[in-house]
Length: 113
Length: 113
Image 1: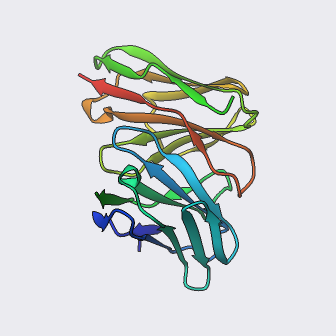
Image 2: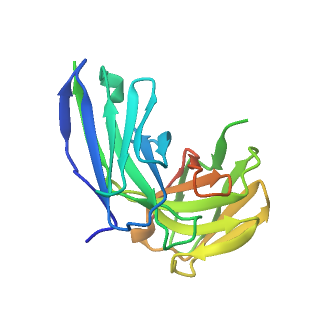
Image 3: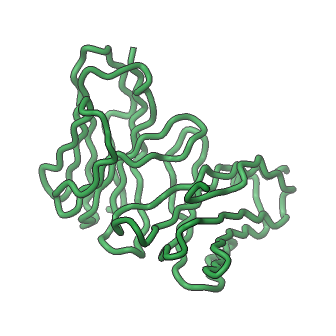
């Protein structure tokens, strides 16, 4: 089992819809979780971080964490064409140094005008 | 200053060349990282520096040699690379602690010929 898994996509949603991106992880002791957005040819950009079970909202973005199910998700409300990018889930496992995060393979999102 | 600056942005080098990639940040981050990213793949961790000391080396070949001269600078020295080393090399930095995400630089696109 891979340490961090995501649906590779591509995920296509119409403009204005909610995009739902999912991530599962294998290390039950993982303590912090991050979502990065990466536009084609650019570097990753941190958009959300979450550490506690439940929801965390920031503008149109909501991160959801369920440690019992080892599941973290990112919801993008009112999706815009500018949200078209690859979204990387990153997990900081307990078993490694806290300096290290593990990236998932990424989900490609396409928002159709 | 909320940026990580990487130079050069593009680099073409022969297999016998020696070159260096540079990374600089002035955010007071004491953890700095080198990642390698191939097309359509997530970033792969290469090295982690914590308080200017190498804390993680992910079994990277010796043709890659990192250096952290001070808390703001990170270098990656390259020597005798192979064509398969062609990739986007990303520098990142963060505060110490499990709940801090990374700030990535814009990367160096390296081509080995």
